[in-house]
Image 1 (cartoon, rainbow, N blue to C red):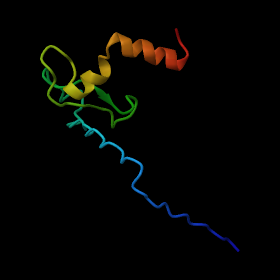
Image 2 (tube, helix red, strand yellow):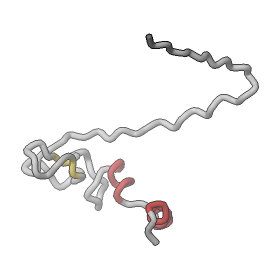
Image 3 (cartoon, rainbow, N blue to C red):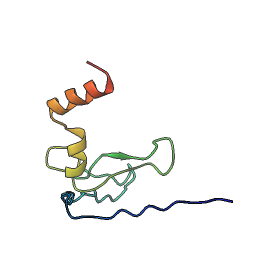
Image 4 (spheres, rainbow, N blue to C red):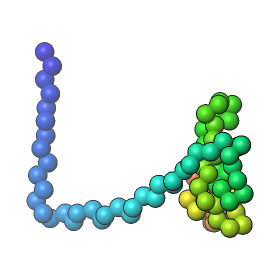
Length: 92
């Protein structure tokens, strides 16, 4: 016999409600093959390059950069963030 216990949380109104989360930006990707990749398209790799399903983002790239806005934010992080990330990972 399995018995489960269900607890019900009751909000008393004394604790503040959490702040609304910032909207998440989702990259719009065309997922193009290397044969369809053009000069003004994002070259962010998507998937495993050893499989036939491998593609590139293909969204419009930022002038002078190989990536779209979304992928440029991932690729080009400020130096202070990179240093912090290394410390978290145990590197110096």
